[in-house]
Picture 1 (tube, rainbow, N blue to C red):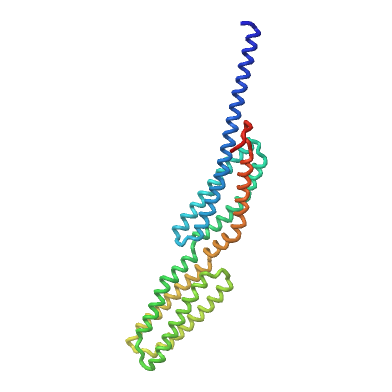
Picture 2 (picture 1 turned 180 degrees about the vertical axis):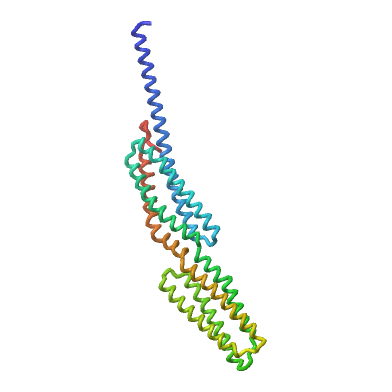
Length: 293
């Protein structure tokens, strides 16, 4: 074989090797571009899933549902962070400067979102307003009814109309406290809650005053019923104190307010940045010069 032929063959081999390497580079880049598109799309899906699950946690009407939805939100947020960490080096390798900037912009906004969302979910799973409502409509209602039933069974020793009036006054005072519990549970302002609590305190004083006045006006056999009424009132007020404590913490009201106001202001910019990132990637051509369909 002549020297010329050897040189020509070597040249062909080198060209073929170069083309193969070029093809390999193109294929590798093509895979990265395709994966970048997939990750950008997945980012939008997982972010939407996180926001939706957090909203459901806030609106849930049971502790179990709140915890479940909060867990789903945390899982989706972890997926978002994983996608960001995977996509970032790909964009740098592809030298996609604008896309890298948009991803970093989203990551910064998402960090703020996560901080606020953690506060919201911590409040949501406490469900203090919901627990207060259950106490009010359940055990507190039963104690109030027991109070009424005990007073209705009292037999007066004299002046029955006065006894009936005092009993009715005491029952009305307890019912007023019950009626004030619902607006207290829903109230977001401390000052308004304080005014409702003052009315509750006044109503309790009126009920106890009526019971004290009743004591000498009932027949001896009815005194255990009066004692039962006092015990029921004590139980009712103990439950009322728990309701007020839970209502004061206001976790459901606060989590909803944060979701509707501050979180909404962070969610929209995150969504907009992800949309711009995906649009920028969609405009990119493939490494071999083809455009994406």
